Amino acid sequence: MRATSEGTRRFVNMQPEARRANYRQTADGLWVSNIGLGTYLGEPTDGVDTLYRAAFTRAVAMGCNIFDCAINYRFQRSERALGSWLKLALSNGTVNRDEIVIATKGGFVPFDTEAPVDARKWTYNTFIATEIAHANDFAANYQHCLAPAYLETMIAWSLTNLGVDTIDIYYLHNPETQHISFSHQTFRSRMLDAFETMEDAVSKGQIGSYGMATWTAFRSLTDAPDYLSLTEMVGLAAQVAGPDHHFRYIQLPYNLFMTEAYALENQQVGEAFMSTLATAEELGLTVMCSAPLHQGRLATPIMSQLEQFLPGLDSHAQMALQFVRSTPNVTTALVGMKSIDHVRENLELLDTAAAPDDTIRSMFNWGGS
Figure (spheres, rainbow, N blue to C red):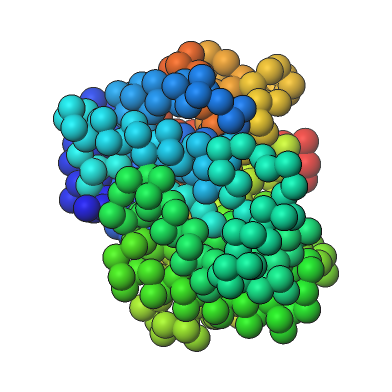
């Protein structure tokens, strides 16, 4: 079982009428809430696991149906907390599997439960000595890898952690880490291998589709060492699998302080330079935005002008989320939430209409030309 267009549409139809406008259809045909729950933050403790499980329950009750992890988040604990919650929720009928979209990521080395005393030794014993990957496959001081057997291992571990047959969206996690460390030719070769591994995982039913979850790759200047061309990445996927490839998602930070995805025209499609958000639309990709609250910094009164553009909201956190989820070509704002109070505050927006496109455009033009 996995998320389906029919199942996610059923989830939408069960929501109050005022809420139904706040779902978007992805490139896979899935219907997802335009605010999703992320699991990056929190100490690697049983107590935080418990908080997350309660947050998942409350989030679903308030209309959220997309949950975002990475295998390295909290030393695999975030995936396991989501998996244990999902197992219970399925058994008691709280949710149906085909209604819930599960996303996770692979790339960074995922320690098990806690940080090891010697991280490099742990990586060597776990991946290099076992011939899952070669030492030269790693970047960032042996903490990042996209080698085929390594990614296959990561997918298998994530399937076990999450307790699912299929991961709906699987991201290559911060691939720019490899680009910084190696030549562009080597990077291209590694991405071709990685995309081939992803396509193989799709054919096996292990993942539904895949994408790239980035931090700086798509919001850097074109001459920066961490910059990646989205057109080139889609071209590599097509080189591997043809026009019916399953590279359908990107994830990148976007918030009131980090506006490059919308404002920086650093991506080339044909002769035109466009923003990453516009390029993604042109290439048929779905965009998920991370860090909409800038890890909590935007939950406090920072911009007094916000209220004139985004009136009628109860908090600055809601205004910051409203900005992100209302930006043209953004499908979902993924916000880290493990507190029931934060879930309630943030997801109340699902009962409020998104701001018009013109409002977002006016915010960028405000005070300018």
